[in-house]
Image 1 (cartoon, rainbow, N blue to C red):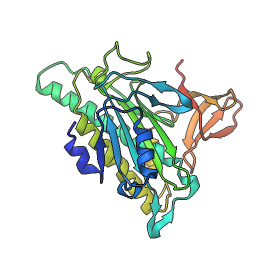
Image 2 (image 1 turned 135 degrees about the vertical axis):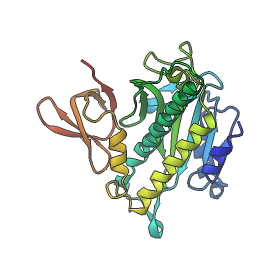
Image 3 (image 1 turned 90 degrees about the horizontal axis):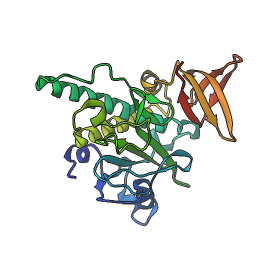
Length: 281
């Protein structure tokens, strides 16, 4: 893949024909002897990842050429070369999720326009693209992208991995609750355009966040994430560490990006990590 639009959006982009994990590759590059050659915003991407992994140690495998595995190196730094406050790190995966949600929305809109120009029936009407806290992008309730962030010890850097389903068909889907851009729109997506849109949006959010001292409110990050987050206002079940479960309504995000859930006893609890299911009745 040449990916000219995406290469223009970041300081360094390496496309690899195949790899076990782009997150592993970028972590090794960012901490190895040539680390200085991998600045903030560097990217490794492939359409053939053989040992992809998600949260809680889950692994997944996709057919070659039908998905993108994207890893972005984030070296957060505030004005004056000050480090990002530890409590602000929770917003990094949410910013990635927001940027991907917006990129997928625009891809869906582009597909609708393409179908209209061909005078074909448009199947994309009513398609809803939202961020599911903390790390998934959903299209009409089906997962199209997952995000996994990994902190690099001793450096403050973060590798943000995203797996985007481009052209999987119904026989390729890893779960019954997954989808792809092709299935959602009926149009083959422009992988470079979607990737460049995501990278530009993510780095733009990171830039605003850093310029405002890691404050999600004043930077506009909190409002943008909240607007895109379909979890807010939903009845949810949160699977917490230690085999615990929380049922309630997701009300808002707190200052550190945690999900505030009001349980069925009326008590508000902030959740920093956990698998979230949107409940439907």
